[in-house]
Length: 462
Length: 159
Image (cartoon, rainbow over all chains, first blue to last red; front, side, top):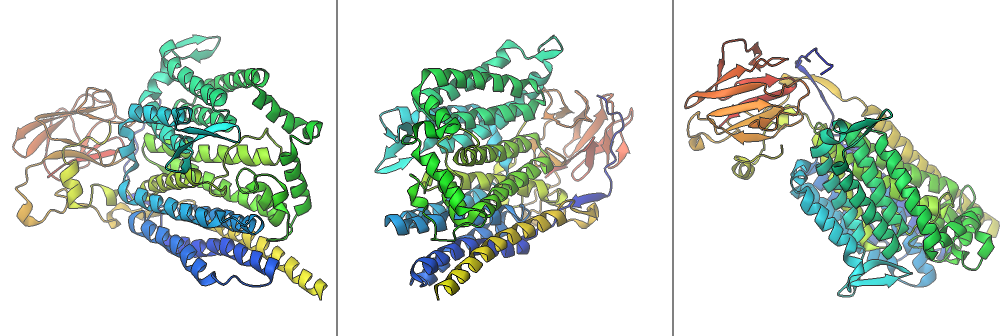
C-alpha cells in the first residue's frame, strides 16, 4: 500500500442537487423537436397541419411526462440531461419515420411509437424494480449462459434470414433481434465477473519482456468471447454485433484491470479474425469493397452511393422536413436513417444528433466516475461504451468512414428490439447515476419496512 | 409567390437547426453548473437512525440484529450479527471490506453480552475507530448506534 496517510472523515460531504425541474424544462424542449418535425413535414408537403395533431401531442408528451414522473418519484438524484437527450433523439427518429411513411404509405411511425411507449414503460419498470444496481451483481454465470442462448437463438429453427443476415427470431408473427438484449445481459455479466476477478487479472502472471502476461487460465474467458464473436460473424453474418460484443468485452476488461495489454491483444485478435473473414467469406469482402471503392460496382453498392448523394444534396442546412428525397436510398428508415437525417436536416442537424449521443455517453461515464462501488463503475462504463460504439459503427458506416455494419442507430432506426433494449440500458444508467449522486448518509439503510424484512439477513454483495 | 413560401420554408429550416443547437447549449450549461456538487456539513443531511425507524411497539429491545455498512463504497451491505464478527479485506472475513485503507485482518467484534460487542483492533495499519476514538490495546465496547470506522467505511450495529 503506497498510501500511508489515512483520510479524515470530515464533517463536510459533497451533495448533488436533484435538478428535476431543469430536467422537466429540458424534456419539454427536447420533445418539441420530434413533434415540430412531424408538423413541419405536413406543412411543407401539404401546406396543412394534420388533423390528429392534438392526439399525437397528448400521446407523445404524455409518454415523456410519465417517464419524468417515474424519475422524479424513484430516481430523484439521477442525471438531469440523460432523459431529455434520449427523448430528443427518439423524437427525431419518430418524426423521420413518419416523414418516410408519407412516401411509402406505410405506418411504420405508429408502430414505432408503440415500441417507444413500451420502451419507456420498461424504463419506468427498471426505475421501480431495480432500486439498487448492485442487485444485478449476484448472478454473472447465469447471465453469461442467458447471453449465449440469446446470441445462438437465431441459428435455431426459430431464426429467420432477412436481408442475408440471420439475426432475427420470429415468434407469433413478431420478429425480434435477441442480440440487442444480449448486449445488456453481457455487460452486466462482464461487470460482475471482472469486478470479482480484477485482482487476479491484474496481479497474477509472468513478466515477459516487460509485459505482464496473465496466467493461461485467465486467458480462457477472453478466448471464449473471441470464439463467440467469431461465431456471430461467420454464422449469422452480423459483422456489427461481433464488433459490439468484442468491443464491450475489451473495454470492460481494460477498465477493470487498467492494463493496456488487453486492448492491444484484443485489437490484434480482431484484426486477425477480420482479415480471415475478408478472404474466406463473401459478405465481408463485399462490405469492404463498398467502403473503399463503391463505384467499382455501382449497382451492388447503390445504397451507400445514394446515401452519399443524399448528404451532398442536404448540404449544411439540409433540404428541410419533407423536402428531400431520402427514399432514393434503400432502407432509409432502418440502417440508413442517419442518411435521411443528413439529407433533410443537413450536416448541422446530423452533427447535433451525434453530439447528443456524445452527451449521453459522457453522462454515462460521469455516473461511472461518481459511483462509489466498483461494480457500478464497470457497468456504467460498459453500458455507455457499448451505446457509443454502436453509434460510431453505424453512423461511421453510413458516412463511409468505416465499412458498413448492419447495426441499428439507437433510438432512431425502425425496429422494436433495439428501441426496447436501449431504453432498458438508459434505465440502468439512470439507476446507477441516481445511486452515485445521492447524498450518502441519507441512504444508510433501506427505507420501506418490507425491504427491511427482506434484507435483514442478506449479504447484498461480497 | 413561390419565392415567398420558399423563403418561409428556408427560414423555418434554419430556425429548427438553430434551436437544436440551442438545446445543446442549454445541456452544456446544465452540465457546467452540475460539475462539482455542493459542499454541505454532514450533520445537515437526514440520517436514518440505527433502529431504522421502526415503530416503538415493534421494537423488541435494543438487541442488535445486524452489522451494517452505513457509509463508503459498500454502503447498504449488512451481515446478521454473530458472536464473532471479523472485519478485513481477506475473503474469510465475516464482512469483507473493500476499502484501500483496511488491512487483510483488520478488526474483530466479540460479543460480551446480549447487546454489546467488544471492538478490538488486530494490529491494523491504519487503525480502527469507535465513535472517533482510536482502538488501542484495550477493546472498546460498542452497541446499537455506535459508529465503527475503518478507513473510509463507517459501520454500526443495527436493530
